[in-house]
Length: 367
Image 1 (cartoon, helix red, strand yellow):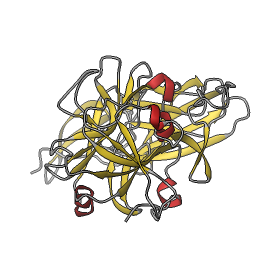
Image 2: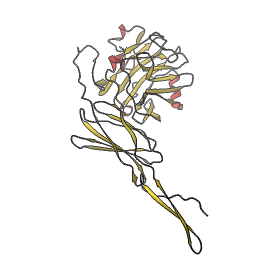
Image 3: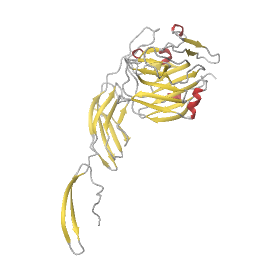
Image 4: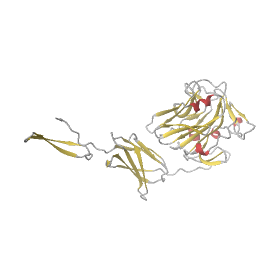
């Protein structure tokens, strides 16, 4: 006969007494009992990994064999509540669009069928809202905001005009060494040629003094040249003050791949590779525009305003603001005097939403 049996549909985190009795055809035999306890569905190690004036990101130690997690955030002040459900593989989540200087109660509980683990709650405040500083109107606006308002091709959006940040404008480019403007006759946007080893580098404090929004879109319109080397280089990258790359967009002419990398909430650099056929055309010498839409769970790529693919990703972590941002840096080199690749750049912006790829156009690309 059976010597073991699985008892199902029990309550989690509950102690049970089990009685086993031997049965014969005409009588009952001896009995034996034992006690056991079902495993807890309670999550542990709930903690905030990053927060600012409008977002809070938290992580937890996952529970094995559950269906998912319910995450609830409630303002202690006005009891306004948001609720989300994450899948069973999740161990982190970010809430955005929160009120500044507000104390929130955040709870996480696991879900298994109709059962729910006990909710584990923590309290955490959002930071005060950043203040915009007034500057001379002809200077590039140094700001304290994560997402200041800028005008991109006649649209007012929250984000960064990275062409202006690096001096790649009709007004400023003549003072930038190693850069030439190439006006395009059928287009109102000039293109800028970055020469080999031009070392176009800017302080992160100057461009992103308050860091990055957890959700944003990187948009770059560029063209590779005949003398662009056949080795990987970063169209743009952000480093720490030791010139170690922490975030960026790399293209590799040898494999015809595009790579996005960023510092995640655990402080580790995650790399996502896009190798679809639509990526290959970036390497054939024409102008192309890429949009990388970075959300808290994935990064999606569009080429020439056509969606190409999506990769799962962990939430963005705290990027260093005491380092540098640079254009064209060769991947195999490090440091302030390392090599950079020549290429042409027509537009470059970082917009603080994940919808810019559908709002932007590609009709301004040179043919």
